[in-house]
Image (tube, rainbow over all chains, first blue to last red; front, side, top):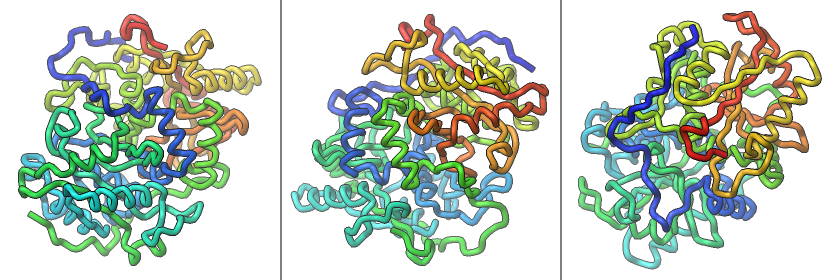
Length: 250
Length: 250
C-alpha cells in the first residue's frame, strides 16, 4: 500500500520547540560546529562518541532523569540482562525502572539521590555531589568534567585508544536559572571545551531544546538551586561501570 | 523513595548486540573516531550535526524504515502540526504514520516506495532510485552522497554557515549482503569520508549494531538486492524539505 494522503495543513496548538537563550549555543549552529571542532581537536570530546550514539528523547515530560540514565546505561554498554523487545536485551525507561517507580516519576519527577538509587539498581556506581557557592566546589566540578570528557581513568591516566570510557556525568540543574523555560532538569554532559570553559549538554527534551553549549560556571550556578522534593541543592552525579561487572573498565 | 534493590544477576536468553563484520568500522572505536575527524575537517560531516541530534532507536524490530524517517523529519525540523505528548508537537513513529499503516509495517516492514509515500504524507519531497550494476548509477550515488553530506544545495552551491541543510539520504539495503545478520534494512546516511570513500550509517537498530562506516561501493552492492515485497532492487531515497513549507531551505 502506498499512502497518498495530503500533509496536515492545520496546526494544532502547543509548541514546536523553544528558542534557546542567547547565551547558549546550539550544537548544530555555525558557532556550535566550530566549538565542537575545537573541542574535538583538543581531546575534550572523547566521551561524546559513546554518549551521542545513544542520544534519546525522554519518553514522558517528567522522565528527564531516567531518560538521561538510559542514555548512560546504553553508552557504558551495560547489559540489562532482561529482554526489551523481541530477542534483544536493551535499556529503555521501562527496563531501567526498578521498584516500580515509573508512575511516581511520571507524576513528580525524581531527585538526584532517587536517580542514583536507580543507577545502582542497574549495576552502576553512582556518586552524588551537591553544588554550593564555594570556589573549591566549582573547581572540583571543572576538573571532573575535564577528566570525564577527555575519557580519563579515575586515576587521571588517559584511556587506551580502543578502550570504552567507563564513566559519565549527569548534571541536575534549574532550567529557569539558565534562562530556559521549565524547572528542574537532568542532562548528560557530552563534551568540554577547555579554551572557552563550555560544556555540551545533551538535553533529552529534544522536542524543546537542541543539544547546546553552556558556560560551565552558569551550569554550576544553576545546579545550586534547591530541588523542590528534597529542599537540597541540585548538583551532579558521576556514574561508573563497576569493575566487577565489566572486566577492566577505563 | 530511594530504591535499594540489587542488580539483576541472572541473564535472560536473547542477545545483547551483535559484533560488526570486520570490514565495517564502529563510529566510537579508535579508527572510527579518526575517520570522523578526517571527514569533519574535509567538510563531509555538515549533515551529521542535525541528523545525530535526532538519532533514535527503532521502536519495533520491523520499524527501521519509519524510524529512519522520524529521524529525518525531526532533523529537517518539520513541524508535524499535531500534538505528540503534553503540549509538544514532535515526530515519533505514531505521529509519522499515515493511513494507519503501523500495524502492517509491524508485520511486514515497508518498501522503499511505501516509505516515500509516508514521507510525502508528512510534507517532504521524496525521490527513490533503485540500485543497479551500472558504474553510472554508482557514480551518481557517490556524487549525491558527497553533496548531501557536505550540506550542498540541490544546485551544488554550498549551504550558508547558519543554514539548515534541507536534504537527507536514506539507504535501503540488504544486511546479509554486508555480512550482517538480518535482511532488508533502512539507514540514514550520516557522513561521507571522501578520501577513503566511506559512508557513515546511522543504524537505528541500536540494540544490534552501533553506527558504522561502510565502503560506499559495498553499500551500493547491498542496495542491489531485491526487496521481498516488490521484487525490485533496493536503493536509496533523497528526502528534501519542500520549498513552500520551509521558506528558503538550503
